[in-house]
Amino acid sequence: MSKIALITDTTSNLSKEKIEKYNVKILPFRIIYKDREYRDQIDISPEEVYDNLEKEIPTSSMPSMEDMESLYNSLEEQGYTHAIAVVLSTGLSGIYNGLKVVSENHSKIKTFIFDSKSIAIGEGVIIEECAKLIQQGESFEEIVSRIPSIRERINLFFVVGTLEYLKRGGRIGKVSGTIGELLNIKPIVSVDIKDGKYYTYDKVRGRKQSLNRIVEICNGIADKKKCRLYAMHGNSLEDSKKVFKDIANHPNVTEAEFIGCISPVAGVHSGPGLVGVVLFEEE
Image 1 (cartoon, rainbow, N blue to C red):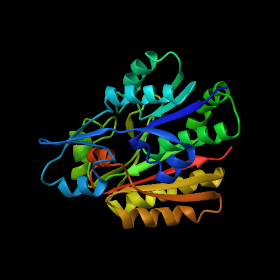
Image 2 (image 1 turned 135 degrees about the vertical axis):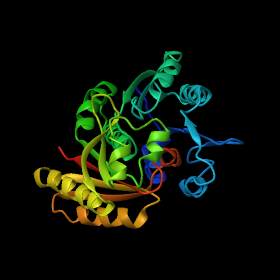
Image 3 (image 1 turned 30 degrees about the vertical axis):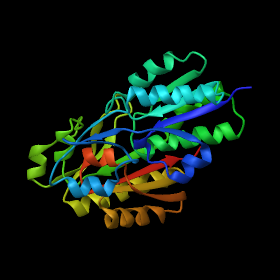
Image 4 (image 1 turned 180 degrees about the vertical axis):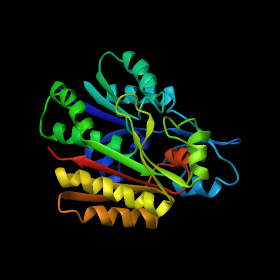
C-alpha cells in the first residue's frame, strides 16, 4: 500500500494548523546576516526581519541540501513510498533543482516535484488541494495528473511599498522600476505561469489606487467564477485587512481566509508594505 508524503517550503505560508492537519513536511529557507544565519519561520519572525531592515538587509538562500537529505532519510524510516513536493517558483529560487538532486538519491521513494510558478499561499493552495485528494483516497498518479490544472486556477496579485527590495534581491523580473517609482506609479504584480517570474499585471498612480485596483481585479474574476480568497501582508496589516474585507464581501467568494504576515524570507525580498491576495477558482 502506498504512503504519500507532502513536501513544501516555508514560503508557502501554510498555517501551523494545516501543516499539522495534513502532516506536511516543511523545508526552511535561510536568512543570512553578516554575523548569523537563521532558518526561515523557525529561528526568526517576520517582525524581526522588518524591524532590522534599516540596520541591515539580509540575503537569503534555499533550504540546505543537508535538510533535504535529512528529510528523505526520515521519510524512508517512516515507510513513505511516494512524495509530492510543491516548491517556490524556479523563476525565484533554485530549490526545485536542489530537491531533484536529493530525491534521485532515494530511489525507494517515488517523487514528483512541481514547480509552483508561484509564491506564498499561491504555492500553499496546491499543497492543500493535494492533501485533500490524499484524504479522499486518490492514487499518487491521479493526484500528480491533476496538479497542473490546480495551478491554472490560481490568481495571485500583490503590491509593495517600494520596488527597492525586489531590485536588491534580483527578483524584479519583468516589473518596470525606477522611472515609474519617481512618478509614483504602483505596479500590480503577478507571477508569469510560463517562466515563474514577476511581471506587471497592471499599474496605477499612488498607493490608495493600487489597493483599489487589486480589489477591482479580484472582484472581476469573482464575477465569473466562484472562488476561495486568501489575503496576506508584509508589515501592512491594516491595508491588507481592508482589501480582504472588500473582496470577501463578493457573493461568489465561497471561503475567505486571512493568512496574516508572509514568511520572513519573502519579507526580505519584498520589503515593508506588501499587500497580496490569491483567488482560487472553484471547479
